Length: 168
Image (cartoon, rainbow, N blue to C red; front, side):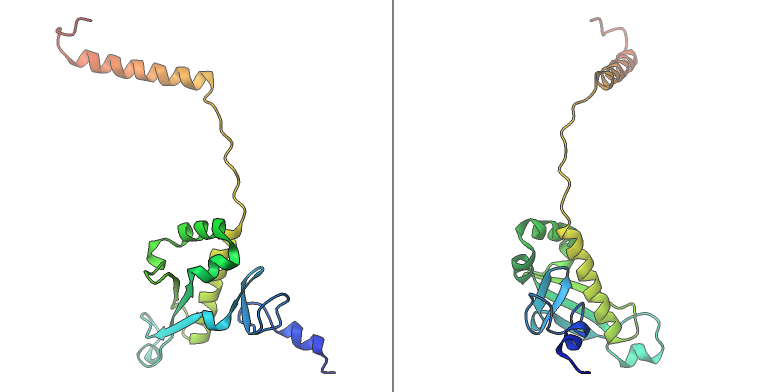
């Protein structure tokens, strides 16, 4: 019962190996229709802060994921890339042109690694979502009138502050 279809069904998705339809052999699908080579996802592990007993002092569970912005732009396109940079913010971007994500909520490297990949996936899905175009609107006649009335009232208040020297 070991057919080829069974192997393809179990691989793929976040953290899966090759076998992603239309993907790269040995690639990881980090978002819908976005597959990158596993070698391009650079993970670094260090000691995590917070609770965890002796685990905190012994194991390096804090996970930092770095992925090249140029690689992502080639996969998602320039307009989605501009939105991704806005979403990520300057703290997650490096001078070397990488996007970095950190996860240290869990007590295991594997869980934090999955957490980093999930955060990257959420960022990419949000960046690739089509933006709704702004429809230009004009102020209504009533809103213009209210604005002018409030400006007149403000001017009257300011005019009353001075002495009798303001004869206009």
